[in-house]
Amino acid sequence: MRMSIQHFITYNTDETEQVGFSLATKLAPGAVVALFGDLGAGKTAFVRGLAKGLGVTKHVCSPTYALVHDYGKLIHFDMYRIAGPGDLESTGWYDYLYQTSVLAVEWSEHILKELPAEAVCVTITAGNNDNERRICIDYPGS
Ligand code: ADP
Ligand code: MG
Image 1 (cartoon, rainbow, N blue to C red):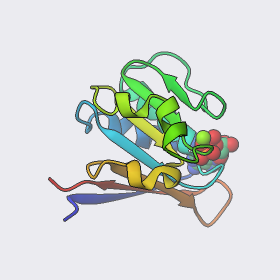
Image 2 (image 1 turned 45 degrees about the vertical axis):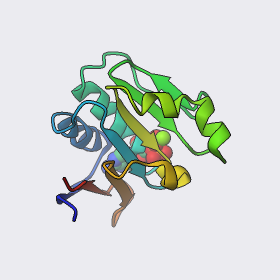
Image 3 (image 1 turned 180 degrees about the vertical axis):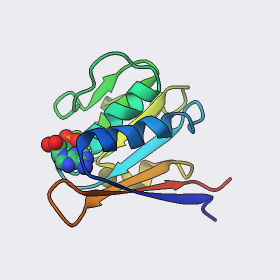
Image 4 (image 1 turned 90 degrees about the horizontal axis):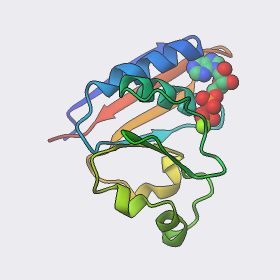
């Protein structure tokens, strides 16, 4: 059973960041935030807000090339180019999973089988106009 699902509609990047920010207070240590959504959906914007909410002061940018950015309290992954367990291992995923940092995972579609059952799933989709986004946050059951 899923504990709860929240829906948001945002109309600019700041609002998406704010939704990410507000999620930070609800996360347990070691939580995995699995993000789903196309290129340009706003996943990185969401993670930027999440990072601020967790007290990360460094600027958060997309880990497209590095695959992972370690901000201490937050580990930010981009799984777009992950094709198998070897790739995933090279990001440190299997080690980070058992630590207390929050993991934010862009392109979670690419590692579905590796996501823990307790992952908080955040799906961002396009709305009715260019700057509108629908954000669904699905909290795991206990
Ligand atoms: P992703 O990481 O999903 O590829 P980014 O966060 O990098 O997406 O980029 C989102 C893009 O969409 C940015 O160019 C941003 O300005 C634009 N945008 C427009 N409206 C929104 C919104 N409501 N929320 C987030 N981003 C938005
Ligand atoms: Mg991104």
